[in-house]
Length: 423
Image 1 (spheres, helix red, strand yellow):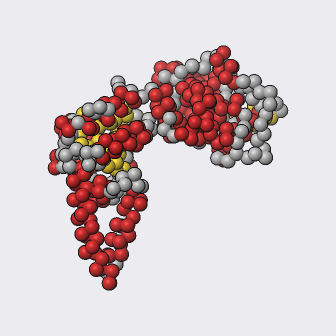
Image 2 (cartoon, rainbow, N blue to C red):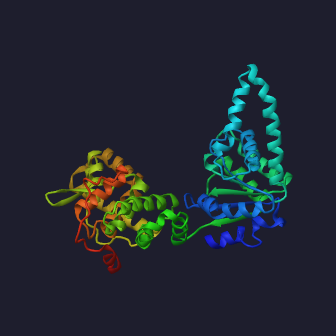
Image 3 (cartoon, rainbow, N blue to C red):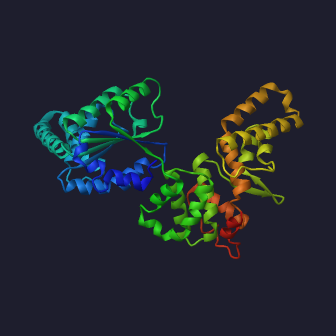
């Protein structure tokens, strides 16, 4: 399975697939799990190199997200408009704004109708210029298939992609999530994949590879490079392979450090951010008579499921060190047995309708419950710091604002990093 660097070398290295004229007219698919950074890999790792090398050959590459495109006509028009632009790095909105504005004016009639001839001429010139830049060596990349408008027929879209590669002898790249299509759409895709496309590349980086590539894409993160290992430790222990979450974690840590708050909280801030980004629930708690009362159990208690609240507050002798599918199934069995025992003790097991609803809630939120227990009781994000600091970390994550009047830099806090290494 190629890693990020190998895939990058294969695509745009010396004599890379996308630069080799022998591959003109071919269609390749880059496939991978949702949110693992395929688009990020293309935009940050491939496109800058590809743009420069194709420019030397007077060719271009076009990246086209399908979101917001309501027809094949829109897709065709944008491909050739973008291909004709001298400054490809301009945003799509800037590139097509002028054309769309004038088109709207022209369609309104009156004296402005005279402009229509100029618009049509300009469109013809752009289309020809775009075709020339794509033909015999250009590259078109299609993305966001999962957000494609229902008004764009998938079979017609794949037909257009096939004709595009053949007529213009250009390379075409499709970025797809695994299992993105269902039902009849999946059947259409399988025919395209098996009969039309030439190659499938699987994007499956390790956590460290994906995190390193994400961290290194922006110089702004140089300010928190000292804390990179602590952030990486958090995402590794949480088993997160998700670029969007990495970026949110790094942005939160960056803001925290810029405000000169205590750096010992970086691991906790990272872990709490991950949990919140996954579930929009907090790991926060309040102290009642010296006892930590977590927000999540309280939430389900107020929903009318006090037994689930008790379950989430139970002590577990064995918490999995890694939640793979086998460990997850076994731990879920343990939790279900505990839940049944709690309901029996509270006499709620006699209410069959209640038990049915409670089991449905448990099944619907089982991943949340497992992660809550693993994060709170095994990874212990609040270890080595005061309750006030931990609570303010979670308040910052939820509100998105650091309040300097509430959160003060604390002294004499046991270094977390040493404690983590002792685990």
